[in-house]
Image (cartoon, rainbow, N blue to C red):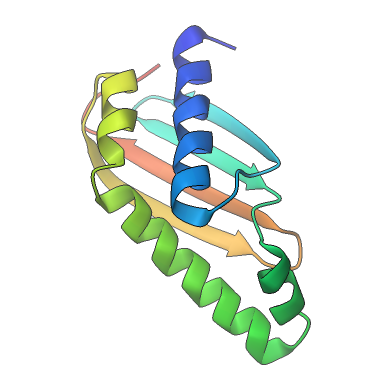
Length: 114
């Protein structure tokens, strides 16, 4: 793993801790051209795990996680990411599999980050 990718992952862990109240259990990232693809495992809180036991609860947790994820990276937290990579974040796409406790985020930057 490159130094830049390790620094990027460290920033992601820190953002999760500050904004979500806990770090993800595991983060895997890959850089492809101007994109960083991040898989976050184990990011559900105990309350979210309890809620996801019902279909309606799982739907609510999924919606809330997606909303929080978008807002989390649209604020000043993205500055740390941009500083590490030397590129400006221009788009973010994310999805979450509640049952699998897996979130995928695709960060798109204004230039190549490989």
